[in-house]
Image (cartoon, rainbow, N blue to C red):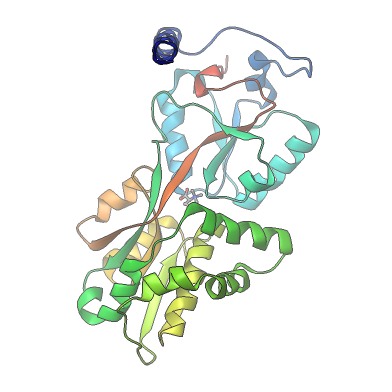
Length: 306
Ligand code: PBE
């Protein structure tokens, strides 16, 4: 058993060395559906289907375009998450190739379980991401009950993804699904509110991003805080504005900071100007994602534009 395991490790090591030496691959094995790895790059017109300009994953993908020789001449198409989702729907229906900027938690992976992340040997997209809670300086002193609750907020990928997917499937708004989630999860809620006294109409502004993942966390925390007597507003804005607003003290808190890679630039820029309350969710991920019917595994299987 142990010997087999070691052999396997040696194999992996060897494969890794090959990847490093070969870099962008140059083989061309097709499959019966006409999906030929060599043609994918041409078939997608050297274009990655992306989301909003200014998203962390957009900034990170621009770094990937610089970092990988295989991505020379490639473009990142930036529009919106909804537009990307509809391109993905179309591609999957036709079994045609598509490369998207993808992330977890996201309902895409529940709707389309046959998606995979491309390996990223240069580590541009990092490994595991966490979603962090950041508060403005002074919140702890001004509003200790709010701070305590926010500090104790922590949940799992499945919780967040469950709300996102249910909202997508049922057509109900995330707010409504989140309220129900709070009702159905008294044990988790009790952990977050442990030792937190009720308040009377204390105002809290949660600054957030417009993605479903962050709409889910903000809605859940809003509901829990309102049950404790807070008056909560959620303001969805661009990532850059989230950070600016917490740093300047305009907003009280965000539950939407993806680290250590996705929002690194913004985090670093303001890191002395907010309190980092640590992670509220572990196990997030970003990267380039393709349907499994595409016969490639790594960013380095893509070809530069000639
Ligand atoms: N996302 C979802 C965001 C954060 C949440 C990965 C699209 C981004 O800034 O890229």
